[in-house]
Amino acid sequence: MTAATDSARLDDVQPRRRPGLIAATRAHARGLTSLFLRTIAGLRARRPKGEVARHMYFIGNKSLGFVAITLGTLGMVLVFQACLQVSRITGDLSMVGAEYIKGLVHEFVPSIAAQMLACRVGAGIAAEIGSMVVTEQVDALRMNGVEPVVYLIVPRFIASIIMTVVLFVFALAVCILTGALSAYYSFHVNPQVFIDFGRVSYGDVATGLIKCSTYGAAIPLVAGYCGLTARGGSEGVGKATTSAVIGSAFACIVLDFIISGLAYFTLQAGDGGPKGF
Image (tube, rainbow, N blue to C red):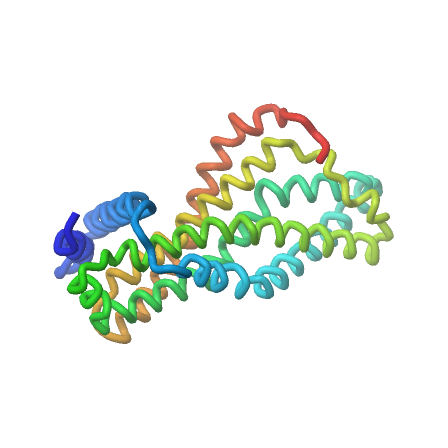
């Protein structure tokens, strides 16, 4: 596929006239599908040395504090409210930790972490690529025979998938720790009782990892697409950044619904699978 064809396809998804909602949705769907296919095809192409590592640092290391503070705080609030309600009904708090960790693994941590990354990482990718588009740096890449998708999207795609999974493990540990501290200092629940992986099945772990990998792939694709279709100078870059945050967050919500439904009837059917991690 030539650079001219690549440029034409990206231009086709940004109609000159204001289209209707259905037409615009179809155009964006075609553009995202085309970008996804070209990204998969570009995984075998040669990439600039060190690009993946650089983006891994930006996506992962730079997001550690943001993810830890956000999910740690939410975990403390969630455990406090759960213990409060259970203490009013039965007073038996022995299973709060086990159910809390189970929910963290397959739903809470992947979904909330993805929303955080959609805000921070999605906005950064769209702004960076959008600025390159409006300043004609992407056109310069094409003139030099460099495929923009391979140079701009593929390294971010690989780095995002890897670091989203790493951040999932990190955020899970933070949520368990802060939840245990909240339960201990608020309701005197022994941490050894609270930290119980007995309710976590292999299906829960598989579901959480699949969600993280899918979110990690969706965020750079949606953000990169918004950046590549930016037009109109700084105003266009601002619109692309806003669209990237909204689009990435919405994509993660839709994927969460789909994966959760499929996992319920497959990986988590009957809550089966070996227990006890």
